[in-house]
Every structure is written in structure tokens, then in C-alpha cells.
Image 1 (cartoon, one colour):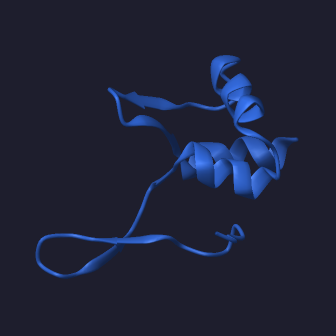
Image 2: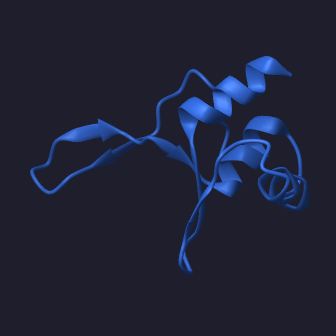
Length: 73
């Protein structure tokens, strides 16, 4: 999956409308940053940017806070 930061992943709701997703997954950050899973988890555990732990689903990283962190680097 190739994704640049200008692309907007979409999801649909029950009424068939399409809306923009507000969070990235760990896999999406791996692709965006060009790093491995361990590097992304290291950033999450160092609290480089906010991440939400969703039970057994995994982490979700809010796009706005991730981009704010990225542009400060």
C-alpha cells in the first residue's frame, strides 16, 4: 500500500456516505515514515505523538497530532 500524506483514506458509515478517517494505524505510519514496526512502536512508547490504544485492535494515531509532530522535526 503506497500512501502519501496528501491522500485521504476514507471509510463509510451505515448510511452509505463516505467520510475521512481521523487516525492512522501503525502500518500506515510505517509506510509514511519508511521505517519498521519497532521504530513506530518506539515513537509511541516515547510519547513522541499521542496514540490511542484500542484493546486488542492496536494503536490509532490521530492524524492532526502526528502531522504536527512530523512538521516540527
